Amino acid sequence: MPLPSIDVPFLTDFLTELLNIPSPTGYAEKAIAFTEDALAKFPELTMRRNRKGALLVEWPGKQQNEPRALTAHADTLGAMVKDIKPNGRLKLTQIGGYAWNTIEGEGVTVFPSRGEPVRGVVLLNMSSGHVFGRQVSETKRDEDSLEIRLDVRTSSVEDTRGFGIQIGDFVAFDPRVEVTNGFIRSRHLDDKACVACIVAAVKAMHEAGLTPTQRTHLMISNYEEVGHGAATGFPADLSELVAVDMAAVGGGQTSDEFHATLCVKDSGGPYHYELSQKLRRLAEDQAIEYKVDIYPYYGSDGEAYWRAGGDVAVALIGPGVDASHNYERTHTDALIATTQWILAYLLS
Ligand SMILES: [Zn+2]
Image 1 (cartoon, rainbow, N blue to C red):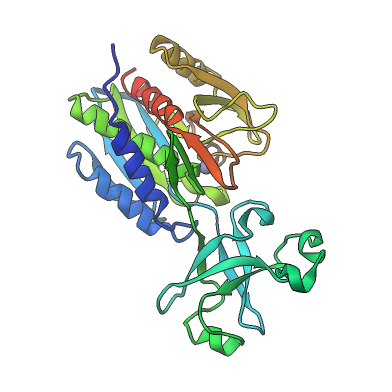
Image 2 (cartoon, protein in one colour):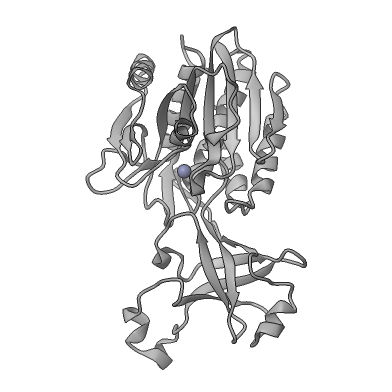
């Protein structure tokens, strides 16, 4: 059976908009709401939030003897204000796992719990080459050496507090989205790229008048980057879960920016063999070129559900993302392949 056609401009536009919505883990509500609005156009879906704030979607299927689920996460890496320094600048604590040097020079928005967002940038505390010379290159980047310089007049704790900023305020890094020659370059393609693939798959099914073979549950989770996103929220009769998340690209990896990858093992160990085999067959039947890979430093929402006691088969697919948890990049080809793979699974 041929797959329904994918609206690629829609996929790219939706992704660009989603990337531009700040959503560090713990503060992802607007990204969840944006996704909910996009899915609200398809009346066959029933949607609700769980108390944790994830978006849960039920999609009736032709059968429901083996219900399935797909998940992707809308939360991203980010930071929180750890301290206001005596000079009015901010010390950070990380949300999610990344190297400190990957955020140096990045524009940020601080979201005070009261008051307007404040812009700024992450800088080394000895950033001027004319003042600090070699120390600019030799200082180790960490929570003590990096700080936020705010774009408001402040030189004291009191000044900064005057803008409503307090310890615990969320900090979002600029996504810097750029679409060129089919490449999409942005922070936080992990995992907004896969949220976009799922939404594009729903749209393709809807426009072709197709129904999933099995009742299918979609979860757009909001706590993945800290390890427990999809730990809860699936129905008790669920039989399979396919986590859709970025593939890790780099030396020694088979994954690349132009293909979707089946991950067979990551830091949490092997995924479910039979479900993985089924996904390989589906890709081959539809002539979707795919990679098989192992991710050395990686965990997924599929494992979060397993660790929480989920008794289902779990597999992981997703588009190759270069420089992950850094300034990331993927290509439309990988997003199309991932969406096709999701469609093949829905129709299998
Ligand atoms: Zn991810």
